[in-house]
Image (cartoon, rainbow, N blue to C red):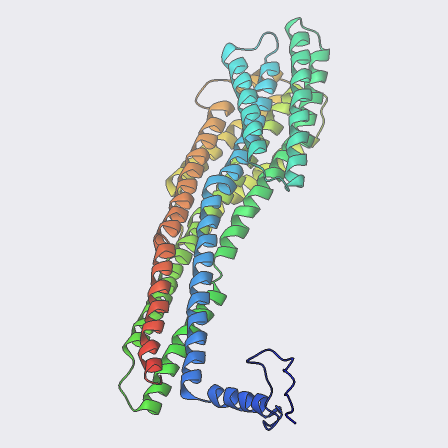
Length: 453
């Protein structure tokens, strides 16, 4: 009897050989062993070294580009926004002070003020309004404190102008109440508006100083990464030479040269830029601060001098203000320059000293006439146009200090521009040298890896 074999239910090609051994986990153990062996092999170590070198080169290049861009942006912001806003705040204070002095001068002689005095007042108010608009437009969105000051100054200027016009209308018809309105206006200006303008200028000036001081700090992270990249490349070459007993790798030498060149370029350019910024601070910002302080003080002296003649109530506060401010002005002029290295505005300050001495003499004569009851004679000295009268000497002081401020500001901006120009091309150079360094690393290690195929 023939026995038929039952057909298999398994698909062809999938039949199981019963005699074949069952699969075990030995193959996975072999895979892990092979991985461990490869990880300890020379090709794996070369690959790891190459990855580390590439990452260091790329990281140092990226950080360099970011650092240089940030420093260039800081200098450009300083030139285009921070310093101009500080100058605008100084101009705002000056315009407000000139407006108050012109308004006060108009009342000393009584009656209708001279045309040039009126024009000077109107021009000063217009200048103050323009500076307010400029300063407001240039503020950062998060600068709440300065925005508050500008809003308060603008409101105060509007109120002040209204009081001056009311005082002027009364003065033209000979109404004595005009001096009361003017006194109220001057009090608002001297004790509220001008102090806020001075605070605004101090805030902006402090930002200029802080920016320059912060810029003087070297980019330590960039320098450390570049040093690490150069050191790693040198170490890799030494190890490869000892291991393979061959000459130095030309690719790694090129990469080392690129990283070293970028490091040297960064350090030299950074040092020169920092030196220029430091000189901008010591030869520009510091004398600019002293000269601006002197000009503001001179305007305060003039205000105290004229207000004493407007208010005939014998109030001694104007005398005290005059003595305090005149002593400060003398100290500022005599102590300039702030250091022997500063050669900015020396002739201008000398002119201001001479004019200030003559102005003090005029004030002494004015006080003597006031004490004798000769108010008209004292007023003639306070608002006269003679060469020995106070207005001309004040104008000489103000003009000399203004010229000095322009000189110091020009020095400041020139030094900042020089600091920015030194960094020119460094960003593009960093990108190029980083690409060259990364390509040289790959080119240097690739032949060594191909030897193990």
